[in-house]
Image (cartoon, rainbow, N blue to C red; front, side, top):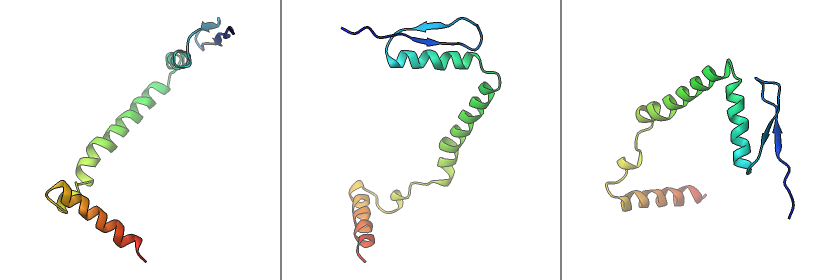
Length: 93
């Protein structure tokens, strides 16, 4: 049985090293958590990015990307037939 070496992480806030044991996900979480604790400008930028993503995917999608297939058929089978027809038309030269 091999003994795994623990990962040593040097946090930015204090001078002593932190010994991290566990699987890769736990070690990753500790690195991310310690990184966020030491941020100054990073926190507002991350919030700005999250708000921007919310606007892009939630609000803009509702206004600029209507349900196109709903206009091509009332039932799911009619919509599927439309998609198959488009694939066949576009695949033939």
